[in-house]
Figure 1 (cartoon, rainbow, N blue to C red):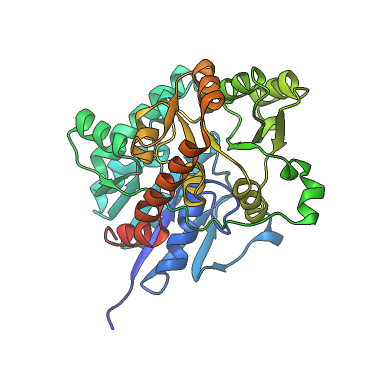
Figure 2 (cartoon, rainbow, N blue to C red; figure 1 turned 60 degrees about the vertical axis):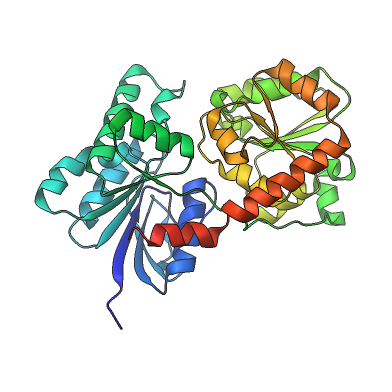
Length: 360
């Protein structure tokens, strides 16, 4: 039996997975491929009492930094540097720590698989210095990566047009979700489960366009929306809570991190609204598609690629209000069937993990 390749995974919060697309990817990749590879997963600063040594058969290595915010750059750079000479392959999730690559590549040509992550520098939340840095690290990552992974065809085209370099399209899986019925206990916790409602799940940041969604539902009484978000973490979210919390057909639900509860809420919804504008192939979207939910999506190329142009799209609150007011039951059913068929064909973890393994 041949020796297993050693693969280090850098750039996620770590394992066990609690939230986020990168963490879910790492979870399924290490679980599905741990018999073929020796994985080491770098994890962010964690209290000693909560640290695990092994998860999914993979070694966990903790660093004294957070994986988000400014510390994430230091976190990624130290992780990349510390494993550069010890592993056959390094999977880097996101580009902010890739500023170190030119120096390391000069010393050793380690197989470096970089998940492009997305056009982070386009987000409104960054100041000009952060934007400059993110664009710089994007350019360095594309130049020095052995292989580049993009999670949406739109990003593949962007990388080719901007840098003249081919990338590998590997999307996200969503088949870890389960279609579940509500229980008496969950109805007590979430009384809206007894009603007919639409649902959406987003982080409370402006480029996810929660304000457009809430504006549309505030102007119609024909449908109810349950919008799940981490409102209290951002000023944008707190402002929305203050403005829309008293409107009868709007339920602002604080973030839910228990997968089964989230699955119950989504499974029993009539419609899923996807309002993200800067995500690639958004995990929340492919999860909804795997549940067979009809999807209405914000009109950007990434969302059209994900849904293969087979649903309805909105550019503003007025568009969305018109769609939800006029959507017929037969069309909802057809959209749900189309989304389910696409998800079964494209957004399964077995396919995703096999595609990554070919790059190791």
